[in-house]
Each structure stands twice: as structure tokens, then as C-alpha cells.
Amino acid sequence: MSDSLIITRILKRRRKPLCIVFVGDEIGLECSMDLVLEFKLGRGVILTDELKNTILARQRIVDAKQRALAFATYKPRTEVQVRRKLQEIGFSPWEQDQAIQFLKEFKYLDDAEFARMFVGDFLLRKPSSASRIKMELRRRGISEVLAQEAIECHFPKDTTTELALKAAEKKLRSVKHKPFEKQKTALIGYLQRQGFSWEIIKNILSELLPKESSTDE
Image (cartoon, rainbow, N blue to C red; front, side):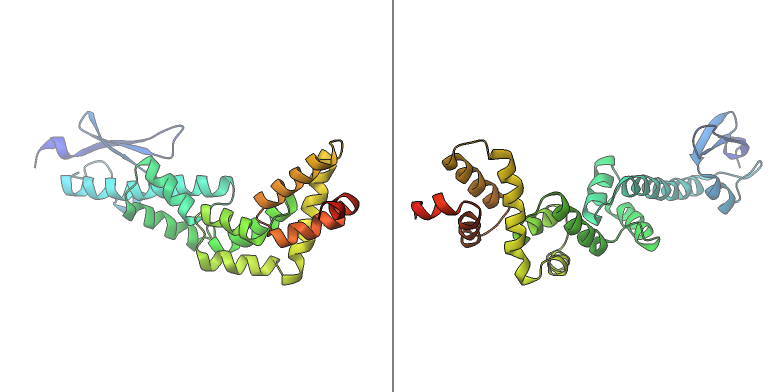
């Protein structure tokens, strides 16, 4: 066996959680300390191409898990968002699967919980219709089933008008200085963008702008 395949030393990088494995005077590979221990790498060990490729493949999984963890813990993410990020970086579908499984195992990724939290937070920031929020969930990769379950948790049937009224009152405060017709146009446009039906919008208009709206009909 050639001496060029024998590990001569292993150094730990200072700023990265990696070890540099030297073969002769050249760098044979870089991998985590866990892999160094798992594969019993050390001075005198023969680093065959097969062993090297196996370790490098395992290191790719380690890297995918670390990148996914950093992305998912910065703020709540969906599985689709994590997959998109890993794909952008260049990880294969199989490597993505391993990272996703890791996040789920340690409770860093849960689409159902994400959906429930998202609906609650969204309603606090911007009262909207169920259809608008469902669209936002679907855009983030939440499945139809999980999106519907989250919506049903926050939208008893009698709360839609209440939410529309809350949204309209908030919008009205910002346009109250405008003429009546512009207030009305602004309210209609805003409520439509939030996904409320025309029937609900008409009821809101008659409640918030009673005198003028009644004369218009």
C-alpha cells in the first residue's frame, strides 16, 4: 500500500467545527470530529478512496443538518421553506430528506404547529378573512389539510364579521381625514384584499358609514 494513502496527522480548525485530515503532506479531507471518532481516523490509518468517499458523503449530511438547523431556528419555518433553502445551497433531495428528518426528530420542524402559530400571529397584526390567511399558509408550503385545520382553530363561524369589522375600523382611522367617497373606496378595497366577501363588506359599510352608505343604496 502506498505511503501517500496513510494518514499522517489530524488538526482541528480553530473557527469551524471541522478537522483537517492530512495524508502525507497534503490535505486528504475535512470532516467533523464526530466522523473522525466514528471512523477511528488517526495517524497510520490508510485512507482509501472508498473510505474517503464514504466520509465525505456523511459530512454532506452533517453540513445539510447544520444549515437546516440554522435556518429553522432563526425563525419558524415550514418543511417546504427548509427544502427550498437546502436546494438553493446545492444539497440533493436525499440529503434534504436526512436534514428534514433530523429537524422533525428534535422538534425544530412542525408544519401543523407552524400553521396554528402563523394564523394567530397574522390575525393579531392584520385582521383578515379565512381565505386570505389560508392563501398565505399555502404560499409557505403548508398542505391543504393542515391549513384548513389551523383555520378552523381560529375561525369559529361567527367571528368572520367581527374580524372584518376590526380590520375596517383600523383602516378607517387612517383615512378618516378623506372625503366620504374616498373613505368608502379605501375600505372596500382594503377589505377585499383581506379576502372578505362582498356581503360582509356591505354590512360593515352600513355599520361604520351608516348615513352616507344608506343614501347611496
